[in-house]
Length: 234
Image (cartoon, rainbow, N blue to C red; front, top):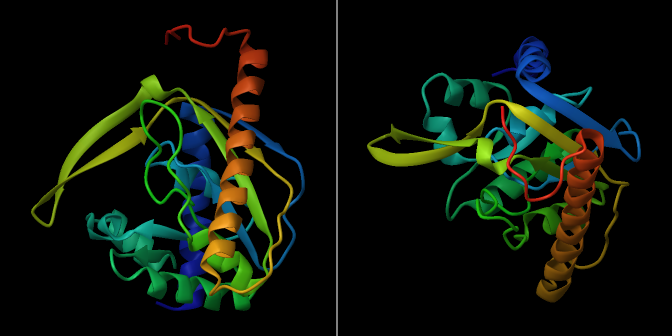
């Protein structure tokens, strides 16, 4: 698939996603620092399967998202992901995905990676950050923009499907408030082969993401006059 086709798919799909988010979601985005042109890493928390599409919709440029390989096997969606230039992450082949992302960063592209690697626990909290975001940041020198997402977990719908004979569950957020806070850029250097340093960088990024998600949550409470712990009705 040519770069021109990838860009065309992005610019065709973006207004479709934006129309959906404007219609079905109550999107609230607060950005502490504008996104510059050139290479950068977008690093959000991951409360739902739909996060890659919703976060990408706020960007003014094409992003290449590291996405679990199972979604590439879903009819239609998989073809779209492949031909839009997104990056497949398969178990046991994580370095291949990192190498591809580094190639794109070197070319001045935008990469989106979810440091948790999995959907955040439905009962609350976060998964420990994996090393991918740290390895990308250290090896490329590109700035990391941490992103904190808050949504209403009781509105996440668990949808089971069979992909290549295997039962998979997606955690889809189809309507409701969706609050995003984008932090200031973080930069890291050092030795990417230093395991302790890589783990510490990943930890720092995840801590910032968690703080930003808390800011998103508190901003929603202030805006709506809601009280934490109360049940929201449609």
